[in-house]
Structure formats: C-alpha cells, structure tokens
Amino acid sequence: MSDTAKKALTWLVVLVVFVALMWIASLLTGPEGVKLQGLAWLLWTLIAAVVIYIIYFATAASEAWVVGTRQVVYMAIGAALYGVLSWWANAAALPSVSLVSLRPTVCLPIFFGFVFGPVVGFFTGAVGNILGDFLTGWGVFPVWDIGNGFMGLMPGLVLLFADKKRSLNALTIAVAVLVVIAMAIILINPVVAHPWTGEETNFGGWVWVFLIGGVVVIIGRFVLERAGVDLAAVNIWGTLGIIVGIGFASIADIWVNGYTFFVAMVGEFTPAAGSNILNAMILTPILLAAYQAVQARTGR
Amino acid sequence: MLITWKYRERNTIIQRLDPRARIIFMLAMLFSVVQFWDLRLVLGFLALALAQYFLARLTWRETRRAWLLISILIVFMTILTFLTGRGGVSYAYFEEHVITRLGPFSLPIVGWQIGLDITVEKTVFAISQMVRMFAITTLAVTVPYTIDPSLYGVTFRGLGLPDKFAYAMDLAFRFVPTLGRDFSITLDSQRARGYEVEKLEGGIIAQIRKLAPLIVPVTINAIVSGEDIIDAMDLRCFGIGKRTWLQKLRYRKADWALIAFSVAMFVGCTVVRVAFPALGFVWVPQWILNLATMG
Image 1 (cartoon, helix red, strand yellow):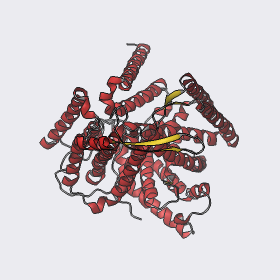
Image 2 (tube, rainbow over the protein chains, first blue to last red):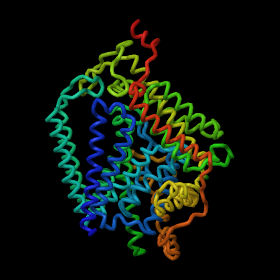
Image 3 (cartoon, each protein chain N blue to C red):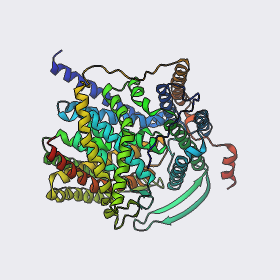
C-alpha cells in the first residue's frame, strides 16, 4: 500500500471513530442515554483523545512531536519539578485569594510545553500532578491529571507553526470564529432552562458578554504583542492551555461527582483557572526570559 | 525541608499484590461507581474501598492531613450543588417531592429571582453524592501510601505504555529527591539573603512576582543539569533498542483473581445499569418520602 493510500485509510478510520463517538454522545444526551450517564466522562475523555490524535496526525511530520532522548529527560525533569514545587506550594502557607490558594507552579507545564513541545508539556502536567499528589498523599484523580496534561500540551502546539506570530494570527481567527459561533447559538435558541431554577429563561443578553469578551481578548493579543511576540505567545497559549485543561477536568466532574454545570464552573473552573492564569501570566514570561538568556550563553 | 514519599513497606495483603493488578482494579472500580446514584450500591462501593484502605493498614495519623483537606472540599462542593438545586435532575431523579420551600431571593446586579426547594430527592442525592465522592477518594488516597514509587516505570510499561514514556516516568520518580534537595538549598540560600517566602508583601501581582527568585533558579539549574544527563544517555545509545528493566513484575494467582474480579465488576455493573436503569437513579426510602407527604 502506498503512503498516500495509507494516509487516506488512516484519515477514514479516524473519521469513522470520531463520528461513532459523537453518535454515542448524542445517544447519551437522548432519553435512553440516561442508562449510561456514568460512562459519559469516559466518552468525554475519548473524544478529547481523538481530537488530539487528529491534531497529531495532521501535523505528524512536524518536529514538535519528536520524542528523543532530550524530550525524555525534559519530560522527567519537568514532571519532577512540577511535583516537588506543587508539594511545596501545598505544604507552605502561601498567600491566597479567598479560598483559592496561589499555585505558582502552574507556570512549569506551560513553560515546558512552550519550549520543548506538546508531548513534554503534557507529560510534565499529567505526571507532575500525580507526583505532587503522591508527595502530599492526596491520591490519584485521573481526570485532573489529564486536565493538567492539557495545560502543558496546548502551549506546545505553538511549535507546529512556522513562527510565533503566525500562531497568534491563527489563535485570533479561532477566537473570533468561536465567539461568532457562541453568539449564533444563543441567538438561534435564547430561551433555555435556567441553571438554578430549571425555569425557561431568556439568555439573549449573553450575546453581548461573548462579543465584549472576544473583543477584549483580541485587543489584548495586540497590546501584549507590542511588548514582544514571545511574551504574547507564551501568555496567550498558556491561557488557552489553562482554559482547556481546567475546563476539561471541571466538566468531567459533572459526571464523575454529580456537580451541576454551575458548580463545575463557579466552584471549580473559575477559581482554579482564574488564579492559574494570573500565576502563569506573571511567572512564565520570567522563566522564559531566564531560559532564553541561558540558551544564548550555552548555545544549546 | 525534607521531601519524602508517603510510601513505606508494610507487608500487607494489598502491598503483596502486583501494582498493575491494583491499578486495573482502581480504574475498574472508578468506572463502576460513577454509573450509580443508588445509595445502597454506592455504600457497597464505599465498603469495598474502605476494605482496601484497612487491609493496607493505613492509619488515621498518616492520612489525616489528606482526609481533612479532601473532606472540606467534598462537603463544600456537595453543599454548593445542593444549594444550586439542579444536581441530578433528569439523570439521577425525575420528580421531586417538596419538603419545604425557601425564598425567593433577589440576586443583586442581575436581578434573578432565586428560590430553593428542599426536596426529598435533592436531599438523598446530596447524601449519595457525598458517599460516592468519599468512595472514590478512599480508593485514590490508598495508592500513594502503598505502591512503591520505584515500580511506577515498569508498572506502566507492563500496562502498555511505550518504553520511552515508561522510562520518563521512572526517571521522574528518581529525580524527585535530587530536585527536592536542590529546591531546599535554593530556598535556604535565598533566605540567607533576606528572602522571606512566608511574608511576601505587596499586592497579589507583586506577591506572585516575588516567587520568581525561588522557582526560576531551581528550574533553570535542572534544565542545565539535564544536558549532561542527555549526553550520558545518548552515549549509551538510549532509545535505539528494546529496553530491559531492573525490576521484574510477575502476576501471581491473587493478581489474576483481582484482575478477573475487576473486569467482572465493571462489566457486571454496566450490564446491570443498562438492564435495570432504576438502579442507577437515586433511591428514596419510603420513610423519607413520608416526610414530604406530611410537610
């Protein structure tokens, strides 16, 4: 079989698997799906895995996915550092904002992903979280380990682009498209069940929230870019990683722990993602600047 | 500051089991328990998790801190779900019997009218939710205290992870004491220069920025040292051929029995859930239902 035929066949298989998963997802959200609600988070994880595989397969030729000796060592160092520093952040009485303790270590999976690629970033986040929980004795919570992995994987995707400016352009377009889709969904069906009361409520006003949010993000990109492309790229890709990672874990907890969507968003996502973004935006650029200085000196 | 693993050798029936079999059991039980909201079944899973915990001879003294922190989180999240009122509706229970009604209250700014119906189903769901979260936590907490950290690489290799990832995992566990020592040295050095991490001053942004003198040197030092390790591994042709492992894991009869039990539990639970959907919903005892009728 020729390479082109192999590639076409793989695409077909991936497409069939994805369609099958989406079909199962639609069954689970239908009246009969209630029987298998408990496995919905597994399906959620499988869909995420297939999406990552699609990204990988579409860009398999990129060096970003190479796992050689260098990547293996940095995976181990990143994970061990994330584990040790998470343990310290949990054990030390660091200052906190209300109930959410500061988690400065979140800059590590983002930094390792951004510099050494998505595989190193994912490993640093996922295994580092396991190590940190092992050192503190909290146990193993797979959904949160995967969520931490995504925090490192997303910034690593920047290496798939020819340069960082192009990656920012692609992200800006993606944000604009997502905002338009969200606004269209709301406008098409503005009356839905209220998350608290269950009564039919008009959420048409939220169109403005998405519009203003999207505009702020896009303006923020250009403001940050004026200070430097690297600074803008690490902050924006890092923020995306945190939103995807914490969002994945929080939403999975709706099925794992039985939270409402409101509790998952307000009780888990907002405090965790908010403090993580703040920590990452301040500490990751400092870490990156220090690394670039060392890299320039050693030439490696 | 000494960074140590929570693991210690106890020679218990749990520790004698193959770690691969134990991880399979943990995942099978996790996939099984999340399918049910019936309190009787969830209590059964909690009993199974507690059996593992006690057979591992873990003491309250060594797990106290983890339990306190996790319990606060579980109680807080359960109360929040209960107060927001829609947890379990349409997948764990489908009708509600009101015991009492609170509100409506008006939310500032958005002006939403929020009322809280205390119903029988919502109350039982909250109890089931709490028991289920404690069952999952009991299962998870046991792992770090009872699986030898030096066995993780070979364990995950045995579970099908590629050699390079399994080795990276093994290496990460081995790096922890070294990086822990480096971190302690850096912390002490910075303290000697007057740095007080416990008393960071300024606004929240300034406080976060002041953590950089601790995080940056440890990270950069680890990365620079990593180059020597890469060279050493490359010189030994790392990744060229198939790896062998110092430790060897072998399944024994008890491990096969545990794996068979785990698979049977997961398959059985899934079949039961599909065949008898009602078992997956919240179970409401008649005497609690009578409270609503009386109310």
